[in-house]
Each structure stands twice: as structure tokens, then as C-alpha cells.
Image (cartoon, rainbow, N blue to C red; front, side, top):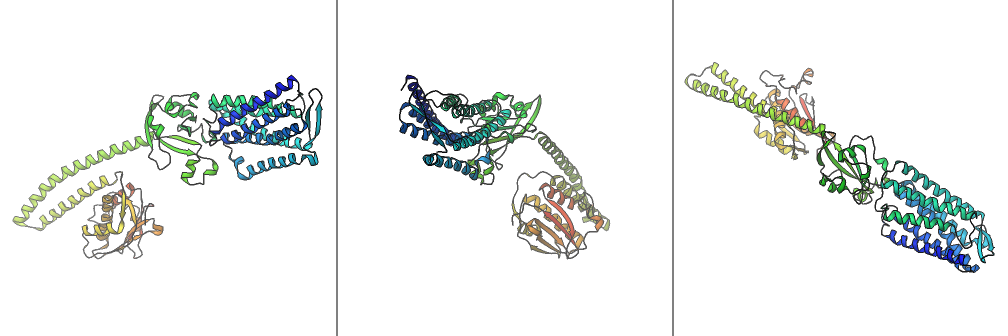
Length: 566
């Protein structure tokens, strides 16, 4: 054995040790995207390098052939493992389907069969050629080896095209990592091609190992400098630069993977924020770093100044999961998440409208209270004087004055109720319509009217406001249907809500479009406010209200709640 051959053997063995070290370093990241394929790639490369070193270290045909067989066996797994590092890193789910993975593994299995049966057919390696200077044996590739090499090169080219596509849109640390993966694929392919074609003939040297050592150096650098596997990007296609809302993608370790232009303006950062922890990017809003995940979580609101203007944002955090996990249960999908998407929905206009409505309601409440107080005081005085006058000398004229006072008192009460009925409802609770209706029936002057309750529906509502609604509909039925009217409470089709029907004279067709308007009444003694109050309360609950003819020819009021729990 010559000195140069000994040096070559030593170099190949050292490279093998380095690859074993990379295997050990990668093992702790095996659960992360790209982690396990990297372990397989590093281990296969280590075996490859050691086998090549052994083949050149011992001048023995038996040892050389055995070592070369080991090299042939690990070439396929090395290439496929590198490819799946690329696939998992870039998030290409199609290549991770079981039939596809099975096909690639099957191809490796076929190659192994070809290698092990080569002594029978000599199509994988046609024979051996001696190198006189060293006495070593250099196997000659066969036609099958060229075919499998073409397959591996094709696979590597597909992987490189995936990486180059990602590199074009990557930024920051992600761009550095992508470039690293490109070189770890190009170098072994290039040196392997030179080795296969015998363009470089150094006794005892498997030139592919040179590509392996260069790739190993890049992987080591990526692990400790570019945070490879510590910081794995998610698919950028989930982020749209044209989104008007700020969007930030975060990996499972709480590092920023990507963010759009609006997010940069919101947090006053640039591309350097990619790779930084969220605690640094969200420094002014520490509550964001611990934001709950999921659509059911209570959203976090922040107020920020962007370009000199005040904006209000509502944060929603959702997991970024592989396509294969979209049909899985929520908990399983969360466990398989690649990261999280922080979407800051601009609710500035919504909040401004809510504040405007709140101010309007406050003014309306204040106005209603003032009007109620200012009208009731003189009305009470007038009622007192009429009572005294009727005690001294009752007459038909004073009786009419008393009726007018009572109508005015009812009008004031209805106006006050109408002013408050449209206020937003902040809290609701389950209310059983049957139980509520029986309660209302005790508070309404029913005369000889009858009530049939044929429903067990339960709705989410403000009990007090819902009682006002039902009472007003019952009074309307009695006032317009007669003292002996029959009223029925029932459930709408598909449990979409409930209805209140009567067998009275019904509502004229031309009046159905106006009956919910304030001040409109089909009777001479009505205030025209009862059904307006009903409509306001229903709208405040988010319900739809409609009126039609009942089966008996009377009126039927339908309340579509769409959230009923029967």
C-alpha cells in the first residue's frame, strides 16, 4: 500500500466519523420536519465513507468487493433521505403520501436485490479492473447501475427544483437554509457523477466522498449557524402579501417564520424579524406571545399607531397544519401543526360604529328618561285633579279625560320601551318558550281569550326583553282579535324558532309591510308602538321576524332564531 493510498483511506474514515457525529447531533431533532430523513442521510453517508475507507485500506479482493457492496447499498438511501429532507422542509405533502413513499422505498429494495444477485448476472457491476500502482480493485459499473444512477439523479433534480422555487421567495434565515440544502444536494451529485464516469482517477479514492465531506461541512454549519431544524419555515403560500390585515407566521418554537407588509408596519420591523422570537417582535404587546390558539378562544385586542393613524386590531391565532391533517380531529391537527398563523383583523371601523351606536343609545336613553319624567309629572298632576273632580261631580266628560290620561300613560310607557328595545344584547341564556309564555299570560289582561302552548323549544335570549316581546304579541292578538280570541304558540319547521298565531280577523295584505313601523296601527285606539317594539327586540337578538296568515285565518308572527336548542 502506498502512502497516498493510506492518506486517502484515512481521509475517508475521518469523513465517516464526521458523518456519524452529524447523525448523533441530528438525532435529537428527529421529531421535527426534515429531522428523521437527515438522520438517515447522515448515517448512510457515514457508512458510505467508512466502507470506502475500508475498501482502499485493505489490498484484498474479498474485502474490497464486500466494502464496495456496502457502498452500493447505502447510495440509494442517502439520495432518498436527502430528498425527503427537502420535502419535509418545504412542506410538499404529495411526496409524503404512503403510495409515493412506498414506491421510492420499493425502488431502493429492487436496487438491493440487483446488488446482492449481481454475482449471478453481472449487470449491476460487470467486473473489476486492477489499478497496478496500488494493487486495488476498481469495480466497473454495469447497465443496471447506470439506470439506478439516472433514477437518483432525477430525484435529486426534482429536489433541487423544489428548493430553487422556495429560494426565489425565501427571505432571511429561510433563504440561507434553502441555499444550504441546495449545496448539500449538488455537491454529492456532481462528485458522484465524476466518480461514475471515471473522470477523476485517484487510487483508492471514492471521489463521491469528497462531495459528502463538503456537504457534511455545510450541514454542520447549518445546524450551528443557520439554526437548521431549530427553525423550520412553513409554506409561504399561506401568507398573501396583498392581504390588508397584518399576518405573522410563527413556528412551534415561537419564532417568526414570515410576515407580510402590513405586519412590518404594525410592529415597525423589517425582514430581519424573520427568525426572531415573538417576544422580541411583539415587545410592545407582550400579551400577544401567549395568545390562545383556536377559533373558540377569546380574541385579543390591541390599539396601535400606524403611519400616524390609530388602528384597532383583533388577533386570531390558528395552527398551520399539513394538508393531510385538515380532516383530522381538532386536537390531532393541533398536535401535527407546523406552526401558527397570527392574523390581526382590522376592526377599527367596526369599533367606531359600535362606539357611535353606544353613544346614540346613551343619548336616546337619556332623552327617553327625560321625556318620560317631564311628561309623567304633569300627567300625574292632571290625573290627581281629575280624580278629585270626579269625586265631587262625576260626568261623561271627566270619564273621557280619564281615558285620555290612561292612553297618554300607555303611550309614554311604550315610547320608553321602544327607545330601549333596540339596545344591543350583551348576555343571553337558555329560555324555554313554553314556560315564558305561561308567565306572560299571567301579566296580560286576557279577558276570555284562550292559550294553547304546543312547543318545547328553547332559545338563547335576554329573558326580560323576550318577555316584553311575547307580552306585546299577546296583547296585539287580544286587542285586534277580540276578547275570545284563541292564541297558539308553536315551533317552526326544522326547529328554526317559534311562532305566535291567533284565529282573529287577520291582517290586511296592504298592512303587512307596515305593521312593524313605529306609529302604525290598524285600530283607532292603538298606539302603533307594540309591534314596533316586538320588531326591535327580535332584531336586537339577531332574529328574523315575519308575519303571515294562520291556519284559522288570523295572524301568525314567526320568529326565526336559527340558534334554537330543542
